[in-house]
Image (cartoon, rainbow, N blue to C red; front, side, top):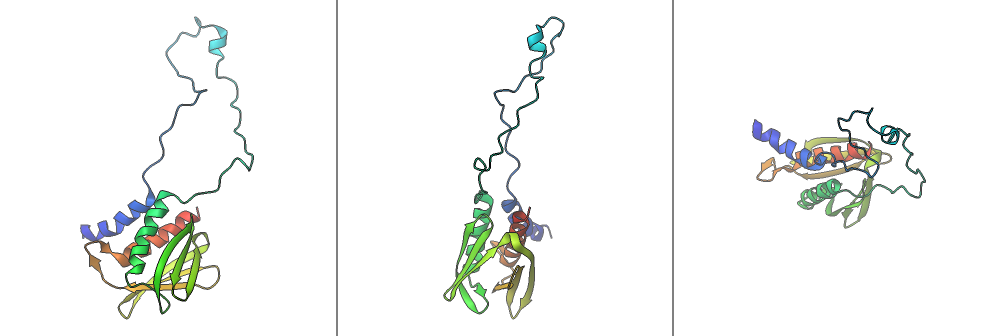
Length: 175
């Protein structure tokens, strides 16, 4: 029982990142020490009491989201799973690419299908004729892809990894 939970939990943990970045001290940070303020000059007592100056909010100074390490790691796993017998409709998948932070391309010999994960409303799954079928509901035509149903392997359950990974990608891109 524990092993099956680990197979689902490990991909989720890999894709979720690891904690928040450490805080860094700024040039205007002040240290608090036990000092008798009656003995301190007025300039020291009043230091830091000014309101902080707001940071510039000029749109040209802000940067667009980038492809982060979490999405790159997930995309490599999804690509490996999809290239191992994956199909988009009836066509074999020849590539899976992370084009942007929340945009992927599923490539077949017949062309490419782009998925904007920020516009995905649901990821549904079912098993049919020995294949695990995933339907990605989004604005426009849903995307239906499938992989061979292999169950548990030494690398885990590919169908569950793909299903939970796609759900996490959609969730992260909509937050």
